[in-house]
Image (cartoon, rainbow over all chains, first blue to last red; front, side, top):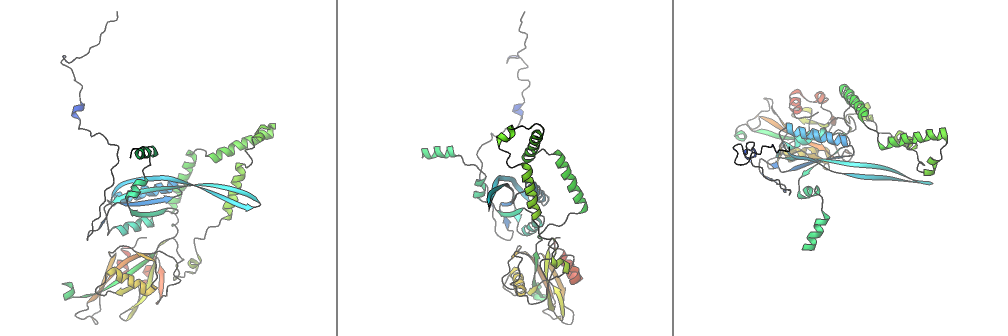
Length: 174
Length: 243
């Protein structure tokens, strides 16, 4: 006999909704997909503070660059400098072709990859900035290029990929 | 109030640093750790494309020797073997000679040249006459009212090394200060002593052939500073020098 022996606690049953807990948790704001643009802060005066600064490290050697970026990040943590983000730019591949023209033309290829890591810092006081610069420069490993510059919109936009289909549709609409 | 009662004469001095060109050699423990990590990485790593290709070609060669297959030749891909490439690269590497780490100036211990001690910071010391004595100091010049201390330091650099020095001054704030009182004989109401403010700068170009140096100068490392500077002065200067 196939008797339905399930116990469905319906609304009239006293134990209805006994396991509810989600109403107890704090309200979650739904995540938005759009990225917000950066905030800038320049305050002149005796307490001169830099706004967002980008420390960019480029090299051919991936391990060196990553380790150096980690080192810089930890240094800033130690010195209680606020680090906004630390991200990597896409790698660029260069193909080197040798054209030896002595009789037989040979093309020797070499494939070089350039890696770039960026550490973004905010709230660096101007009295401390040269000391930090000196420390980073003296700890620089061989083969790593260092570049410190202020964060701009162009830097921010260079991380985003362009969507050609979206642009086409927008162009058609307008 | 300090200016009214006991005025000090202010000097701005420039500490010109030449940054190291090579990294310092590793310590014994660092070398051991590096060797160990390399070995671990080697044992954990997987074969790369080049090594796979080499292995495959070795196997093909073996098969050819044993049973004379002609299928491999029909492919025609293995015109350049991976082994040949490796040998070519080895030869190229042997041809490359890196520059020597210990230069001639190191061997002759010529302290006036910039080429020695490529792995540490070099500082400029100049012989200056103060009072009656000739002392080795960081180049300094008296401050004139109306100019910032940083420009005093830049002027000091310019007087001793000529105008076209490519140096980058770090920041507007001084790095250190040394004050001393004049000996009682020279002390007057207005001139009790002097305060020297130190600024730091990095030398950008390593070529000083155009510089007209007006006095005796030396480029020394931090350890050798003790040979030339007086102890009190040295203590204050050492406080802001990184090694």
